[in-house]
Length: 463
Image 1 (cartoon, rainbow, N blue to C red):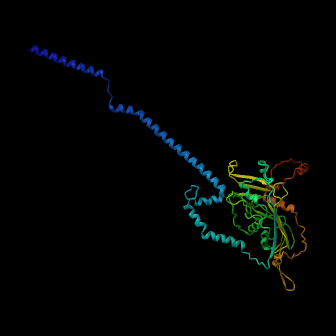
Image 2: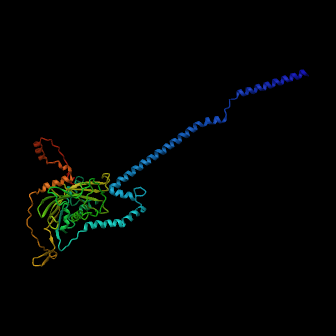
Image 3: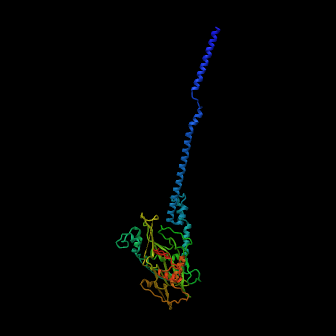
């Protein structure tokens, strides 16, 4: 039995060893298991990288989109600003921005309300009254103050002198059908007011502020700005005259057309004068100024008519109470003497929708018909004559005066014009000579010739 027990024990041990060996073999045959967490991390690494790339790429796209949006918005704003400058001018744009609260380059009804209140405010009305008072504070007596009788005349622009004939040879002929752009130009055939009476004292505005002003020394009537700013072309109404000289020039120019602009949109702006001759009683003054007219009215687009210059002469008593002679005119000694600019809807026009041309104006002038005198003349016997009653009957009394004798320091009219040219255009301080004269001067002074060929002129607006 002991032997049998031992044998059973051995068999059990062998069986256990066999099972153990089989288990070890099975374990060896099985692949090595990796912990679950490590396997998952290895599987997630590529996914995390893809996710990071997507996030970075999306952020870059958003940043680029925002940058493009800002860039495009800045271009739109800049284009809107440039358009606003063309339409309003720098001062107009500044005022516009003050009331454009949300800065979207548009005035909505809520924003306009503030502007509306400002327009109707007492301050601006008071300012307008102050301007009127400054201009009209001098009182005139129609019975004693001398009257200057003026007569205006003009021959309209020669339409065939414009370069429009290059586009259409029929331009300027009676049968040509003009576009709406030219409505104001074609309709302007004669002066608005042929005759007008002004007080002699109003012409005191031409006198120099300095009573000791020298002959031949030019002076400003309307000071030209040091940094002239181009004013907007999109205007129909002229500004209220601010000074006596502006009011006088406006009253003269309105004889030609109902919409004169004493101050031009661009340089040369202003008015100047120079004393040509003098004596104890009188001064002869030569003057020059640059102004323009707006020929169109809404709904037609603006059409600007800018003569080369306005010039003339005035013989006036030193105290401004008497005017012996007055003449204002547009020089017609050049083939072209008017500049024109107009807005158009023509798709072939430049980006600013402005077209330009020049032409010839044969005549535009205002002349004094006789020396100034009061409307009521007193006789030595105490009786008086009311000239107004005679004028109604087509009659008048011509008052005769002695011929004026000037002092020896008088200058020529040509020299006076030259002085005014140099004031407006400093480059005129260098002599510009006609072709033949230039060769003679060059031979005498042994200098080279610099030739300039122009379509128009540099020293007036026929350019």
